Length: 292
Image 1 (tube, rainbow, N blue to C red):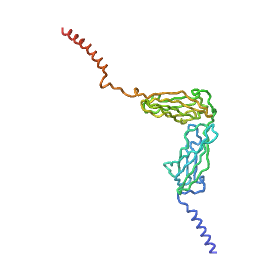
Image 2: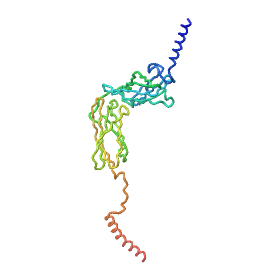
Image 3: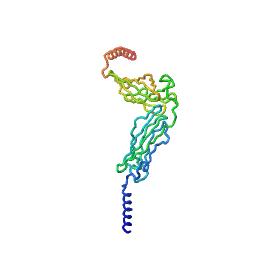
Image 4: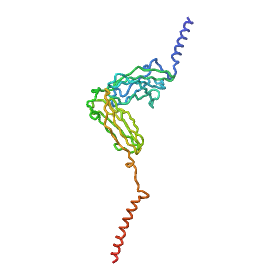
């Protein structure tokens, strides 16, 4: 009987020792959801919101060394999701190992669908991966195709400054003429030439500021550069439209001072000599009359 009791005590002690063998900082449960939560802010994002993911550890003894995730995005009018994009979590200063955040994406148009998944690693380098989460940018895309047949009938275009200084960037903005129509995407095409050097052709993609507004930046160029640019935009059904061409010049005459020549040209000297020859007799005659 004593042997049986001793064996029971030993088994109980072994169980206690085995359950207490977890070191501080390690996961407690067997799944991500047992030890942590993940969500987004704002919880109901609109087309004007930058979305953040928030990772929160439930138990203060668990330490997250690193956390990252994957996000799949499907834009309105698209049949498939884009390849996954990586995002990395950064700890909040007040709780570096228990609360972390990451930028999931910039503002996306209404109707965009996002699926994401998070992986976190504890103090002992043990990873835990969350379930898939998803949400949709609020709002309904009403019209997916252009309403007019020309670029100007569908897209408003502004750029500033219209007379840039040398090396000053130019911001180009486009917006949908019709709020119910979403611009699917756009590129800024550019040709610039510095004095008599060969012209250079290039381009810059527009980034989205909301459902109707997109922006692209032309970098600053030195004085003596002539710039021509135009826009290619397409709707959600990928119908392209092209704008008129716009020009500005960073000419030297506008941006440099022109001090007087240290050595005047011969015609300037000759003209001055003639003027002096005509003026001297008049001064002498006037002085002679006053003396009489």
